[in-house]
Every structure is written in structure tokens, then in C-alpha cells.
Image 1 (spheres, one colour):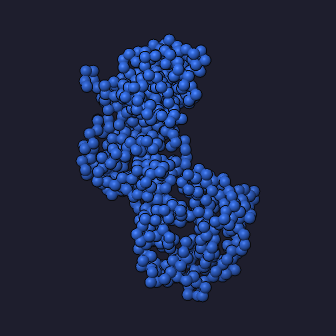
Image 2 (cartoon, rainbow, N blue to C red; image 1 turned 135 degrees about the horizontal axis):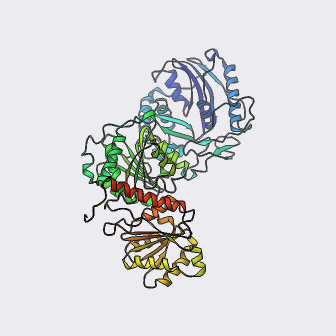
Image 3 (cartoon, rainbow, N blue to C red; image 1 turned 180 degrees about the vertical axis):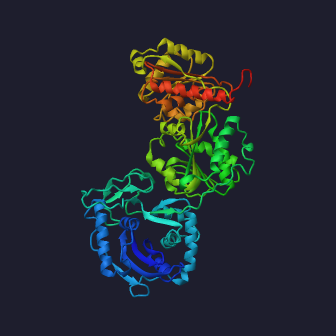
Length: 617
């Protein structure tokens, strides 16, 4: 994309701006339609590549004597700055030709034709409408046109002038989609190529290709977020300017916690989170709070009071979860809990992609289209794939929250770094150490067994494993059997079928097209033994279930995975104990830490009086 670049001198000093429609800027500054007193104007280039203009604007600093500069001085300035751009980019062929300098003092000849005065009022209305539609979003130009296609009056074909006026009003930010560092290199340092960073997802963009759109020999683009549209160095990224975040006294209206029917443990944690929401964060950055709740504790119910707090104060809240199936499961529950609040449900292929709502439920990848949109961002299962370990999604989540907003993280197994922050008092948190039925979590049994590969090679199962499974089946339990490799599922299913011929045994994995149907059949007890991978380590609740984790010493099963898999057992009220077995040739640190974490939660629940006393229901 080509844009205009200019500097203007007003009572506020020298300012450099890029423009999508220079006529709008001419009317705004020179004819004083924006209430500004502009007394000098220099149009530096009327058709500069977006990547160059954005870099120049970001690195602009007024220099001594600019008030007395004439045309030749501005030409020298632009040549010097574009050379610095080439050096930062590492491409000497990036800027071809000499910069076109158009000199124009206020009222002098050569000024761009200003936007027609007769259409200025309508343009103001269009700019206000566009800014409202863009509220809380960051979009590429093609996405902007798709968003505006349904507006009335239609703006999709003539939105640039409205976007420029919204930018001048401070309601919209305009920049290149990729950001190139503007730091100036010391003269004695060797010249090195600087890798641009994607403003949308935060990833480093290392791919460069010749670009017909901007004419540059090496226009970079981001591969990391390519699925959402190509983020290029010369592409325009439009970002909304966020209003102030909402706060207020927690629980002041709407009945506070009473309407949600929470348990004592849930209420205590939710109250702590509400108190956190009621305080503006220090330092102007979003506040952070961790709800550390055991598997099956009812995390969703605990966030309802937090969503209520934000909605009642006119704010916007986001609940982000890693998986589409969880989004589809939560949507009707949130809609039922908040019948009078608007709800947008976003995932790949969602029909509500451009819907504005008080409550937004989305997969984590969808956050890359938002910018400082939400007063509250709830990140569910922050330790799960794909959010965990993906800096791109963490960047998107951080960008989606208002500077004065709040993050609430939900997890049964927070990452080690977050656990250290809790231990050091650097992260506010609340623990929910007990499930809704108020029974302790099942403590895993450590069982020494040969590796799965060895069992398959010998075509036999150890007697101790057979006995434990037989006990589970005899008591009527549904049996999860977790293995580390997809290739091991079918041969291990064959071994189990041979030893347990009177029950239905099946296997499933991420590559199984019938996985959904098998999970349903397992829940309905048509399948009694289900061999699976970590694809079912979370998000699946099966009444009266026992869990066997084979090769529990494998590096794939870290502490978090072991705790999550163990969390499939004991979730139902009619079978709160369940059984969990860690089976492996040797005991590992991850197994020991997982057992210790479960025992610690039980101890906290017992100390706080959350557990049922003997004989109680």
C-alpha cells in the first residue's frame, strides 16, 4: 500500500503523519477544521510505501532548526532517514529513486486539494461510525473492508478518508502490519539486517519476497499468523484506541455471589477475584490473577460473578479457551446465565466474526483480531496446547486487554513459572482445592510395570495390571488407559481384548475420525475400556471412571499432564473416590510431584474445612 507522508508545525511542535487520503489532512490542519493552528506544512512524499512511512513516523524526532528549513533541507533529511531505513532493513535496493519533496507553507501554492467542505459533515459521521465499528479491534485492510461491507451507508468502497479522519481524531491507529526497529545503529557497529516483527501476533517475520503492491525488492511477511490473512511489511494495520477500563466496587449490585449457588470454596475464590477486579491495576498495565482450581472444581461457575461485575458496569469481557469444542460447550451455558447480555462466539469459520458483544467467547487464535478491547480477559486452561508455550497467542492475549483492564487465568495445573510467582507473592491468586462434591481427590497408586512396548513385544499383560483393571471393571467403573504413542493403541487394544473378552475395548487418538462417537459410547457405557493418548487428558467427564496411565515415566507425561489425566477419576457424586494408577518401570520426579500436588490440595481442603466429614453427604 502507498500512503502520503507529511510533517506539520503547530503550537504543539513538529508532528509527522502518514495519510490514507491527504485531502483529509489538508482540510484538518490547513483550513483549521480540526481546531488546530497549523502554520507550516511540508508534504514529504505523496506515494511512499507503507512500510517506509510507518518506520519514519515511529522514529520521528524534531531536529534543531526545523522551523527555518527550506526544501533542500527536507530533501537531505528524507534521503538520510531512508538510508537509515535501508540499513535497518539490510536491503540497499529497498528504496529506489529520490524522495519527492513537495514544499508548501500555509496558504502557499502547491498545497494538496483539501477535502470538499460540502462533504465534511458527512465524512465526520462516517469517521464516527467507522471508529465505533472498529472498537477494540486490530485488522488488516482486507479485513477492514469485510467488516465494513454491511454498514449503512456502505463504507467498504470509500472508507480510507473516514479512517484518516478517525485517526486524526485519535480514535484509530494506522501503522504497517510489520514493525521494523527504529533504533539507530552506532557508526562503529557492523551493519546487520533487522528482522521485522509482526504487530498482530508478535512473531519475527523472516520471509521476504519481491512485492508488486509496494514495489520493494524485499517485502517481509509473517508466516506465524498467515491463516488470518497475510501480514506484510507494506500492509496497513488499523487499531482501535481503547477507552478507559471499568472498575468499581465488587459485588455492589446484582446480588453479588448469592445468585450463582457456589460452594464455600468456590465462593471464597470468586470473592477474592471480585475484590481484585474492583481495584485499578498499578502501573497502567493489566492486572493478573490466578484461579488455581483442581480438576472438576467448577471453574466455569466461578467466572460468572466476574462476568456479571464487568457487564453491570458497561464493560466488555472475553473468555478465551484453547479448543473449539469447549467454546461450543460453554456458549449455551453463558447465554443462559446472562440472557440480557449480547454474546459473540468466535472460532475458525464462525459466522459471528464481526459481531460486537458485551461478552465474547473465543478460541485463543481469534484474539489476534482484537486490540485493547476488553476490560476483563479470562484465559481458560492456560497450561494447555496451543496456548501453553506459544508466545504468539500470549502476545495476542496481552494485546486484547485494555491497559487498565484485568486478566484472570484458570488452571488446575499452572505452569511452573506462574507457580513460582504465586510462591514469591508476585501473583494474586485463589486456590480451590476441592471438587463440588466435597470429597478428596483420588491419590494415584504408583505401580511398577514393564513398558508398553515390552508388553506388545511379548504379546502379554503383566498380572498386576490385569488384576487392577479387573477390580475396576468388577466395581462397574469406566476405564481410561493412557499411552504415549498413537502407534501403540491398536496393538494394546488387541492385548486387552484377548484378556477381557467379555467387555468392549476400543482405542482413539487425534487421528481417529470416530473419536467423538467413541467418547459418547464410552460415556454411555457401551465401551468399558478406552485406550487413548493425551488428547483426552482434559475436557472429558465420564461418571464412575478409573484411570490407568502407562509408561508414566515417559518424558511426554510431565507433572501437569499426570495431574490432568488423574483428574478424569472421581469427578461424579456417586463415585467421588475413583482410582488412579501411575504404571511404569521406574518412578520419576514428575510422578512424585504430581502425587505431592494432589496430596497438597487435599490437605488445604481439609484444613479449610471444605471436605465432607465422615457420614455426611
